[in-house]
Structures are given as structure tokens and as C-alpha cells.
Image (cartoon, rainbow, N blue to C red; front, side):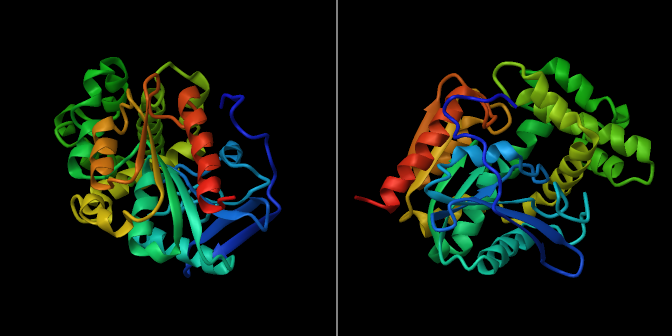
Length: 321
């Protein structure tokens, strides 16, 4: 991952937790920054992406109590790549369990891509627990949003990468790639499962930046990361993310009183800008920042700057002089 001047310096966690949220799933949670600072929760993408140490650097460690965790089945949470009891409702309740475990009354939420989806859904479920939201690469998780990336849309911009994405799928099954991938990723054939996982994850890595980023693609192609990402994403998208169609927009009124900043790359091919525009239109007081020279990744230089500015600005809103 590229480093960038706008990011805060690397920091280490002052506390780590293994939180058992049901009989099967154990979540890895960490805290860093200032234990007495403004609590903020980092929500990673995917679903199934896990968080990275660099994600701590979007926040001023002197001012924020930064909480990061790996969602069910990914990163350091266990069991790895597990789909049992892994739904959006489970993740929303996991966030509540973390909040209560850490004795946090209210916190801010910071999420990109699927992390923006989860932040919005949690805030709509527990608005009284949320101080504000910083969202990047808006993913409304509707059928058309999923189909853009896995059926028809993004393929027109990356026809060469698309050929590699569809390669693991038999030609007679390519009319429903989600279903075909779901079969491959849950099959007993480990070789087929891992080949599908790599192709699925690399497709996302390749399309996430405006300029090619080999380091990012290699990270997405790592077998451990790819298996969780591909299996969990496909599982969620096969089930319409376990939410009602257009649920986030329909429930936007619940959170319109909160301070909300939306950061969106104009050339985002994973979560196209129309989703951010629709969300902003349903949240009239939200601030929409369009980055004109950026794609999807949080590590696009312009997006890094906009996100760090947003976390700094939220402090002034929450702690006015």
C-alpha cells in the first residue's frame, strides 16, 4: 500500500480483544490512538476484506479513540471464510456488541465501499448511538449495483480483466456469474475453489484504482485474503446483502440529522458515482466531495486527502471551541 503525506504516522494498538459473538464466531478487535479521545469505528470493505494497519492512519491519534475490527470470517476473526451465521443483521449486532464491550456510549463511523453500506445500515438501526459518518465509495447494495460489477457495466471498461474474471466459469454457466461463482467457491474441490477466489478478488483489485497499482492487486490475490473476500462477498451478493431493495435510500430520513461526509471518486468503477449522488440527494445536509482524479480505492491520493480532511473536520463539529 502506498504511503501518502496526508496520512497520520503509523500507530500501534494499545488494546486488542478477541470477542466471542456467538457459539461459532470470534471477532478480532483493536483500539489505538487516545483512550479518552472521540470514539470512531473503522468499517472495512468487502464484505470479507479485513482491515489493515494502514487504516489507522486516517485518524489523528491524539484526538480519536480508533476502533478497528475484522468482520465475521475474515482477517484475524475466526473461523476463517465461514459463511454460517454470516449476514448483514449479524454484522450490525456485532457492532453493537463491540460498542457495549468497550463501554462506548456513542461513536462516529468511518467506512468505504461495503464499509459505507454497513455504516449506513448500522446508523439507521441505532441512530442514537452515532455521532456522525464519514463514507467513501458509496455502495447501496441494490441488485443494479451488484449487476454493474458482476454482470454488465464494469466489463465494458475492463474487457481484458473481465476475460480473466470469467475464465474459471464454464461457458455454459456464464449467464449467471454470481450463481456459478457461488458453486465454485463453496465446492469441495480445493483447487477450483482457490482458483475462483483468486480470479474474483483480483478482478476487484485491478478495477479499484484509476492508475494500475500492482501492490494492491497482489494483496487482493493473496490466497488467504482472496478466499475470505470472494466467499463472503459472493455469499452476500447471492442473498441481496440480506436487506430489502433500496433499503438504505428508503431509510435515509432516519439519519439525516447526523453530520455526514461522502467522499467519492469520479471514476470509481466498483461503486459508480451515481450511488453517491443518490445518497446525497436523500440526505440534503450531507457534504458530498467528488474527487475528480480518483477511482474506488481509499489509497488514491486525492481520496486520502479528502478522508483525512473529513476526520479532522468531524472533530471540529463534535468539539467546537
